[in-house]
Image: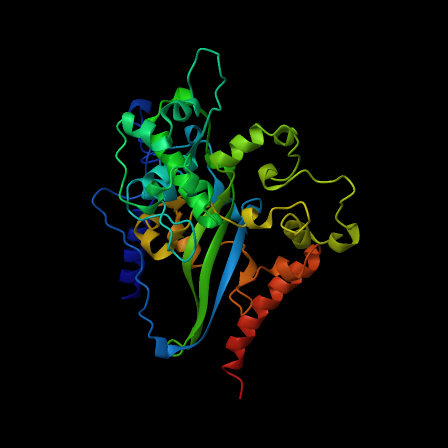
Length: 405
C-alpha cells in the first residue's frame, strides 16, 4: 500500500516540471520546447479553505505586513523583471496580478476595505501615466489644456471627440466650472479630477500628453492584509490572507520623479528605487548610528523608519489592492522559481498561504483607528522593529495560553 502511494505521489510530481520541457530528451534545437509547467489537459485548482464558523473563532487579529523585495528570501516575488531573458513560463507576481485585472478575472480597488473599485480607465492610468501638456500660447500648436480653454469646458471638448459620459456624480463637476472649484471635500476633488484625467487620456491623442510607463522592476514591496485566528474545531492558530497590493513607483510617480526640478530622480542613491517616496531631505537629518549598529534586521526596517522627510502614507500605500480569495484561481496556476529545486516550483498561492516569505508587521487593527506603528514610535527603527516583534509574540502567546491551565 505504501509503495503504491509513493509511486502515485512521484508520478504527480513528475507532471509539474519547471525546467525546459523534454530538454534532456531533445536531440534537435528546432524541436526544443520552451514552456514546461503543467501537462496539457491537467486541471489544478487552489486548495479550498476550510469553512470557519464565527462561533468557532476563539480570537482573531488583523495585521498588515510589508514584504520587502530587497530581502533575498522574497526574491521569488520580484523576479524575473526582464521577461526576455527567461523562458515564457517564468513571470513575476505583479505580472499575474495585472493580467488578472486586465482580463477581468478579479477587480482592483483603491483601498483595502474594497469600497472603491478602480475602473479600466483609471487602471490604465496607473500603468501608463499621462499628464496633459500645459501648451504654449501663440506657438501655432494647440495641445493639452489649450483644447479645454478653447472649448470652454472639459466636457464640451471630450464630447466633441466622441466620449460618452456615464451617469455618475463626477460628470456634473467639470474641472473648469465654479462648482468644482468650490468643492470642499478634498477626497471628492481628488477622485473627480482623477476620473476626468482618465477620461481625457482614453480619447485624446498621445501628442497632448507627457507620459511615463510602469515597469515590473518598479515594484519594491508588497503589502499583505491578513487575519490570524484560532480555530476551536481545528484547535490551532491559522493565518488567512485577505488583501494584497504592490507598493511601487507607479507611472505617475516615475513621471513626477523624472520631472522634478530638484533632480531627485538622479539622486536616489541606495534607497532601493524609492526616490519618489522621499522629499528633499536636509543634509543634517541623519539616522543615529547607535540605533541600528550591528543589527541587519533593524537596518532593513530603517529604510521604512518615519523620518520627517518621508511620505509615510505613500510609502505604505499600494498602487492597487486586490481581494486575495478572488485571485487564488489565477495564482494557483502561476509558478515562482524554486531555488532549491527548479523542477518542483511553488505556486504563488502556495507561497502566500504557507507564508514562505519574510514579512514585517507595520500595523494592526486597534482602537486608535488602526494606526501605524510609526505613528506612535517615530525616528527609531530598532524600537519599531521590536514593536513589530511584540505584536507577533502577542499573537503567538495568545495561542499558547489556550493550552495553559
